[in-house]
Image (cartoon, rainbow, N blue to C red):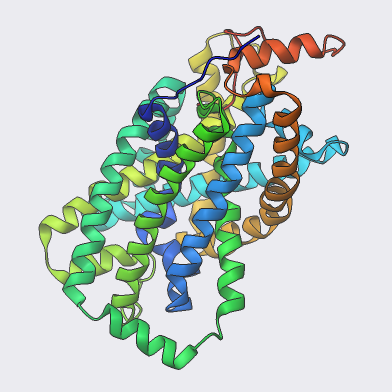
Length: 415
């Protein structure tokens, strides 16, 4: 049977890439806290380490989506069982990482948004937590289409505003090259080991978005499509992250001398420049980033847990989603009490170390090998629709006790 050539529209490629960008451009990123914690201290090596992290992240996502789509898998549990086979039970390692990281990510989003609302409007921190939590809850329960559509437009808006904010900040200071050169003269290559570790750690904890990405990436039915979409995402993520590092490097001497200036360093810098319009633009960008992270991350959690027997008695789907989302949001709100800086430094950091071993290294070694071998042995898998892949998997594994949902009606986690 001759296979027709499959061409994926650019809009689809961009949409999937934008989902990863909007998930990455979240709490710690938008506040500048993540860049300050993991890259600014590295000096001239910071931007290089950041680019490496984004490369690792997008390559990992590409292999995950290819593994998922080509075989017609229907959950990230199946994905990791396939990756770890014949040691299938090791999939629980990702489950542990995912659940803890979801709490950390949503807590950072809520903490950052509440702090921003307090700074801008003088709103009580706890009232801000409640308002942000309710907004994330509403966006989460509306379903997959809204999340995907919102992520696309958020990605465009955040990229444009971020480039404008960071460019103005760099130009305003005007001494970036001098700062980088002075750091190179002082530190040389002494920070290389830490730069490599931070590169892998940052990419590691960003892998919490993997369940959302494999679900949103089901239209990418070829290896080329997965690669193109992730290169688009790499460009978006790398540009925004490196620009934020450049700006913070330029202003490091100022915001580190201000009390509480490292919690939301970008806001500290905006106010010092005395440009009200820029502060307003940054506020919009910041809230979009925080909300997008809260929604995309919580959605993956909800899609997984609303299927448990505990929640099956709730027949009304939005109510069931709301209950699960409320549970994760309440836990995250509790964690947010320790502060954004501690969440990012310790919560994200230790999760990142764990993800290096259970996500990044396996996908970029075993995952690459299994994908190449599978596509070579099953050329018909290249370019077939996700529904066709599900049907093929059902036909190939009739002996399974738990039959996947029929194609066209299957349930997926995330988008």
